[in-house]
Length: 126
Image (cartoon, rainbow, N blue to C red; front, side, top):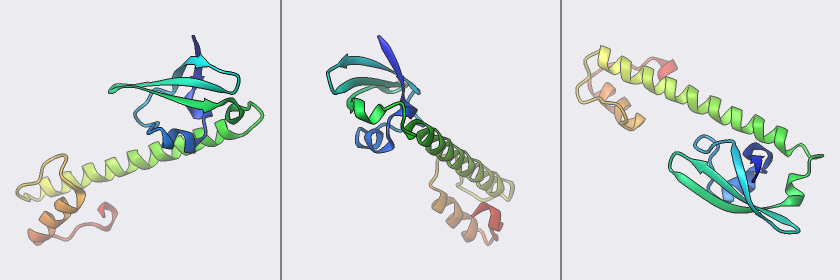
């Protein structure tokens, strides 16, 4: 079977089909082919998704692939930055003895508990 890099598929096609590049492997397989489209199988730790993509959208002369890589890298970087900030917020709360703070709480709930404890949150953690 042929493989295709998910980053070469336009973002709107991935979004329409519920494909988030943070969770799916970049290498997908082409399960079927017609004159005008490919049936693509994208896999993740949670299972697989099948969707059709027009061959015209995968034109090698287009800049879709480059744009998709840039978009995916920016999203991954933003996610990592937010996750790091969240981890620092949790650590701040625990270091200052804020009761009831645990991992996987909503950020706003952690902030509310810190404020209820009478602490000021550093601006870089907001």
